Length: 424
Image 1 (cartoon, one colour):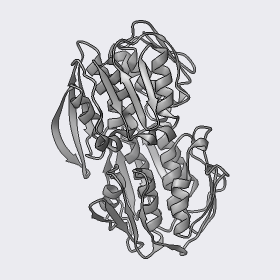
Image 2 (tube, one colour):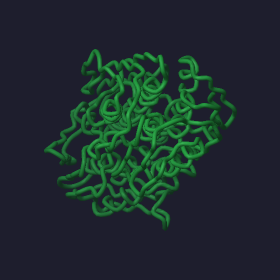
Image 3 (cartoon, rainbow, N blue to C red):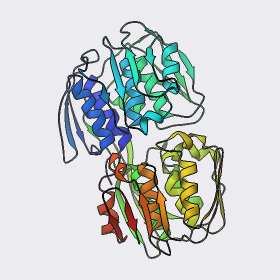
Image 4 (cartoon, rainbow, N blue to C red):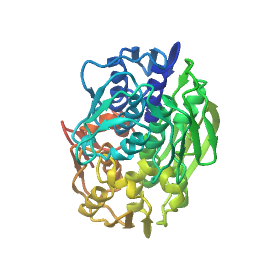
């Protein structure tokens, strides 16, 4: 599986701000992570690679970034834009963050509002979207005590990065656990972070010391294969070196509740992150009510989990997942529309979906340029009674450029055209 996207982003950000040279293995060579890498090159950081997942970052120190000559184009990457808005709010220079049509439609006030409370000066469009115009406020940010209204690792990480440049203590409290790669990696770079239950605190009193990072495989990418092997009779797959950070393993827990046969083998810790091999064998799935406590731990995996639900016996109900409506697409509506085209009973709700499992037919569905939607409907082809054509798939390259070749090697009859893919 390709390297973890969240950790790849953060390795570039923190490695660039560190004193010394950081070596990264397992870096995700996909468009989102490469957008972060290019942004830091544009701010004067020397970065070698990536070559076979290896990157060498010559850190410039916490205050060593330089003003970019042009706006930073972050493509489709919400992680890049939201985390950089916090990191750049406290710099000594101004900059502009832009992105593609999809990213330019995603909500940014969730980060710009709390940043404004810290003293940041960031202008958005009237709708609260990109482009973001950031006026550097070096030495003028103040720490805040922020209780997040939604469970979002991007908001939490954004404010922690801003807190590295703020006077006093910045404290973030989350309503439910979200991925903690930022906190773990800050500690790995010897930057002091305090954790107390659901609250994380940081100050400007610290510096980052270069570190070697081994990025595990991305469980969000592995999820397509966990579901694929669970729904395709006769399947037997082992996925190696997958990150099983407890803030990310909701997909395993949900699939197991549905009856999936997934073994976690060879558990170990690599660079402060838990890693394991995942062995999955076909098993008939049953519909469940998905526990709301697992929703933030599987938020990126729901497109393919909806496909698992469509193949399961009985009803699956998801609630508490309104966050899915503001991802790269409205993942609730887009998946419901596509599943209905394929003959599945799927009813969207404001914060989730109700799916009656059964058979999947063929048809043409639209991914709306959302990489996870495109891959999820490709996996649905494993159980479809007729070919599925998925339109608008170029953005699969934002997270998983190898997907097309991997699924073909594993036996999915898939044909790729310039902008869409067809599975038989």
